[in-house]
Length: 192
Image 1 (cartoon, rainbow, N blue to C red):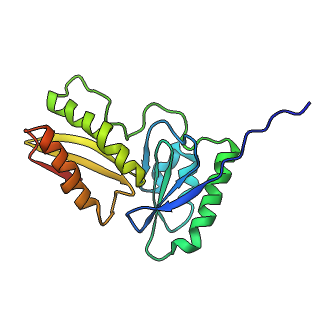
Image 2: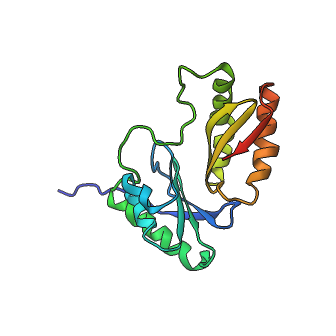
Image 3: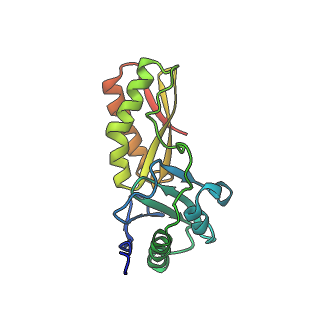
């Protein structure tokens, strides 16, 4: 009796606004919670990130819900590594291994309400999660709330947003403008 085999996953890639980062997708969920890796030492929970950091040119891996972004060093060109990278990610997915080992929530989610959060912080997190993060995810990035102090919202830029030439414009003209419009107490938004 033949058992049905799972359909293999085909991985595609596309550029992001950050010329050093490509977005890889496979029409499937990679991980329920975002996970950001900026060095090989951080990859203990991610078999996929560990494989990608095995290349000397890899400078960052961001695993979103339905995509992976890889950031490369200046000295290597995408036309040389993009297709082999897509194949490596595809092979990993088809092996059945997880992108990130099952754990509690990774570092990316903003919505986890803290009982100490003020009304402003809850509103900031809601706007980030419902309006901002889905838009930046389309470009292979993420924005993670850090803190709100003295009218300043501090955010971590991850994935393709980290080091992106247009991230300052996104931060100031997009995120800052939206948060200042919705929450009068917000005076500035800063990336950390």
